Image 1 (cartoon, rainbow, N blue to C red):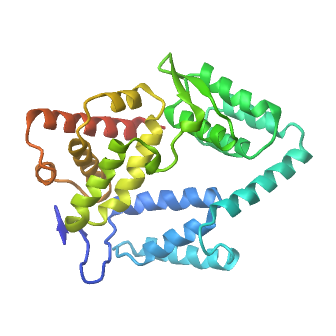
Image 2 (cartoon, rainbow, N blue to C red):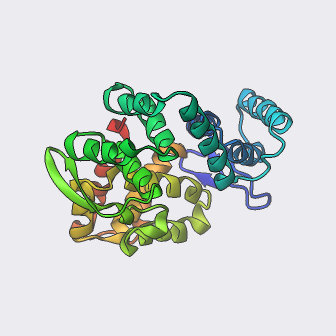
Image 3 (cartoon, rainbow, N blue to C red):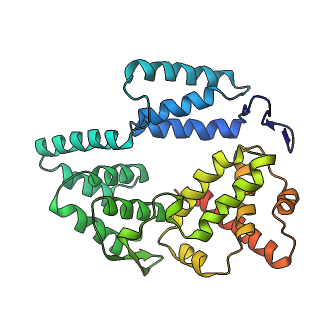
Amino acid sequence: MAYDDGDYRDEDDGGNIFLLPKTIDYYQFQITELLERERFGEAKELLRFLLECQTNDTAAMEEWRTLLEWLDQEFPQHEEPEEETESDMLRKALLSRAEKDERFVEHLLELLQYSPGIDEKLMAIEQLTYLDHPLINDSLIRWLENADIPPTLQYTVLQALKKRGVVGEVAILSDGAPLYVRVEDTPTGIEAFPEKLQKVLARVRDVSESELPSLAYFAEPFWLEWLYGIYATERYEYLLNEHFHVDAWAAALHFIVADRMLGGANRDAILEMYGLSEEDDLKQFEKAVYSMDSWSRTDD
């Protein structure tokens, strides 16, 4: 099935997906991230999926095949993604290191507050999630309430506090003003968000099912990443309280994902798919496209 300029196709007879260069770059990043986080089971599952796809990039296919063979040889026990087991292993390793180095937790807290790099801060938050120390919860909460930090880090800290069993309200500094959220309400997964936000993704699935079924593979992680990235910010609160047109936001999500990851998007055709023609609907569509596009280009 051709899409726009014909570079992308989804074969009805074999169910094969043709990977465009932008899509390959996206998956390369996902594989690297999984390996860095030692989530070998998920990396192997993703590689098997990619090797069933089609692409003109033979070098990428050979790299994936070699990497999968190496992972199968080095980590044969990781046949399925087992988040709990891997989390237990990480917790055990971190607790062991903390026992040997009494300043380990303090070092992670210093990285969190003073390191200039986002990756170092994310690593510190993840490791602090599994450690037992009286300073951790208070330090994470104080950082949220007193530092103007990127929204993605805000969500990550809230998620860490939730995993650590913290409950209650915190005042997050958002654009210089406090925004009050409850730690235990921090969403994990699309089903934890308000219904209207869930409907956006469901609408994209319904519309793309017959015309472009592979779109959902990319729409769901993008939509979730965007929601996580704006959670506990004025943008998220505005999204919940404004007049919200599900079809307009679904069309915008469809447009962004198709344009970024599937080789291009036909704006008018997408608007027609979602039945958008009224001026107010078109304004909300353009606003939604701008909101997601500007966030994904500037969030780092």
